[in-house]
Length: 139
Image 1 (cartoon, rainbow, N blue to C red):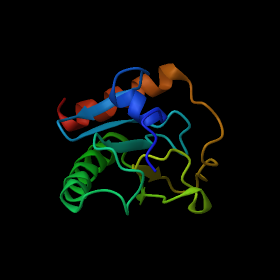
Image 2 (image 1 turned 180 degrees about the horizontal axis):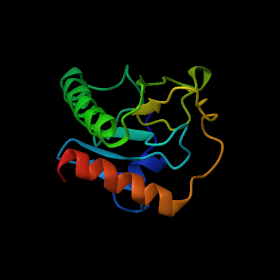
Image 3 (image 1 turned 90 degrees about the vertical axis):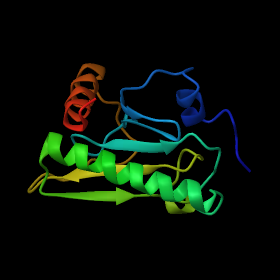
């Protein structure tokens, strides 16, 4: 069941601040507050869906397009050696916020990823990273 009080629903409604890099009628993208790497970004649909199995196929198709667009901006802004695009479904699989979302996680040669959902990033750094992605996207 979808919980309308999850943190991403609150971010979408503007009740909680975020470091936004992209927004349109269907989705919002912002820096992960507990990033696994420099440039870790989340893409979240505005539609209410708990996970991959709950979202309408047409909304998911648009979300994938948005994720690709934002990932290209992250790639341009951070120039990582590789990138993970990740989506979790339910707590057993690692989902911690029960609103479908995609993680864009840049990977850098010789730099291990930090543990997911552990340490809060410095807000000034997140703001700088968001600005880099926005500029790369032309926002």
